[in-house]
Image 1 (tube, rainbow, N blue to C red):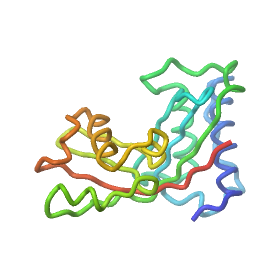
Image 2: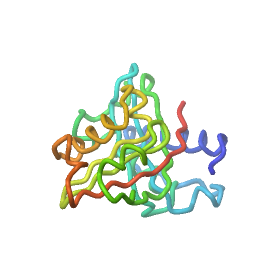
Image 3: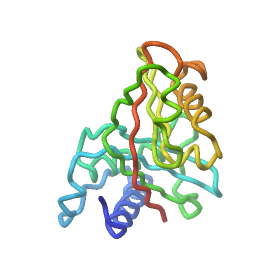
Image 4: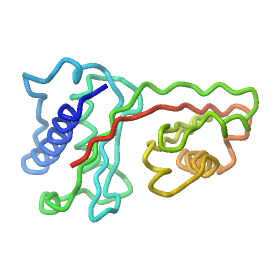
Length: 186
């Protein structure tokens, strides 16, 4: 578990990474005194909100690199590379709230029949990844809470995020993974 202090360190680091990149195009390096736990390979997402509306969200669902390095990369990408939004400007950064979600490793949810997903997914606790062939979609644990979705709506929306039909979770060949996250914000 990451402490609240460590979480605030990550949030400040994400903001610094974005503001530095927007100012001069430089990618910062993690501070020398970064705690060991923050150098472990972890999945991480950075979400940017402006006036309670999504402004960018990019992340690594899998633990592919040290947390602080992954955080810097996804923070910059959330601000400059989310295809749903124009690039964030330095002038609007004072209106942006930075949120960091540190993820557990995704685990395949094992079921005998798809209806069992209804009992194995917990809204408010689990994030989901739906995978079918080349299609893959992810929703963080906070999303269904923000939209007041039940489990079925959560599954359907994760399928749609993957570019699949809302009921794809009922089909053979679909893999659904769950993960949890610790959320830190400004």
